[in-house]
Amino acid sequence: MADDMDSIMGFIMGNKQRERIVQILGSKGKMESDKVAKVTHIPAPSVKKILAEMAERDLVSEENGIWGLTVAGAEIEKELKKRG
Image (cartoon, rainbow, N blue to C red; front, side):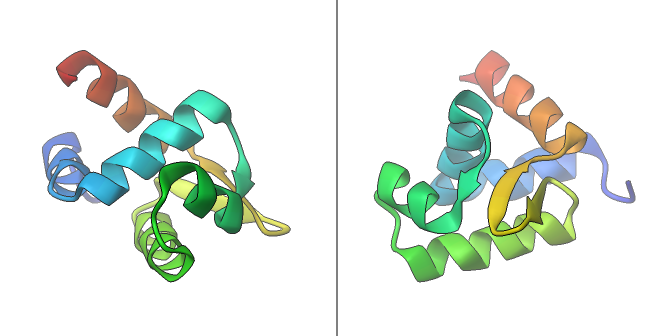
């Protein structure tokens, strides 16, 4: 992965919605983007945009409409818990 942990953490922690999505996928597991939107109370179009941005950084992946954290995403979620 090109980005180092600190820049990824900055990317996630710089946006409360990104942080929330990582936490939800970490605690509840894989789900559809609409469900993520419902659980996080973030508008669905925003959730889709954020998931796409995080997918570009290999933090989440999507399979058949279901989104989940990648290994790198799970590391970030652990780090968020530590810093929380």
